[in-house]
Image (cartoon, rainbow, N blue to C red; front, side, top):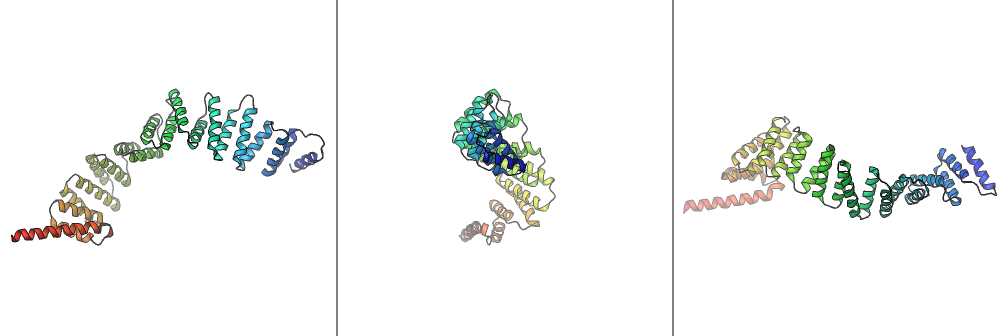
Length: 352
């Protein structure tokens, strides 16, 4: 191949005639086969100076320009190929749109993709994705939504289009609409675990904990790790369903032998009981935690339970042990001060 390149180069330097386009095409191909990408591109571009409408020279130049990260020049050449070709080759406009997008010329990418979508009766899904991303990056969310609305009217069974609609809605910070679109998409095509996690995060963000909990149950079908049980329990509690949360935590405790995991589940159960004003039962749970492990959180809530049960001295003992811990110091000191005031008032009342 090196010999072919040399012969062609000598011909180009010595000829008095206008070399045919095929000479530049062969020279570029010879250099490209030897791994000389820069030399190949130079040959193709030299040929384009004489034959700017030659499809092969345009295409070879565009591919090499794209490979060398010269996206804008590549994009313009891909679009030129589309304009030169009869019948049209839609994938050239797609390549143009992709190259403009890589070059961060999102408006140009959106324009090229609009041409492609307008000229194509049944566009490929990757074309639609690129078009929508281009519209969004170019600050044209309305176009993205209008196009998706049309697609969904014609193809409501296409899960991928519903997922794309969710992406557009999320980019517009319309999370309720995004969640609804994802639910529709997932009803048509089973979601991956990652997709389900995305939906859970959206429901958490829009403060729909029961929806998030139902989605978690759908993923795990009752087979939860201690961490997942903890998360689901808190979701039920936030949703105002503490009894469901308690049932879940009890089931999880029955299948969790590891001490560290049980500790956190027990603390969560105690806090649920505390929120239900079941102070005696909560106290028992927190005491169980403290028998096996130093747990400031359990001690703090047990102190609160003793307070609610009017067991002042027991409450004082727990708060005294928390007074030296930075996280609980301020609250413990306030509680101890209040207990001291309460004790003084009681002594005065006894004297009186």
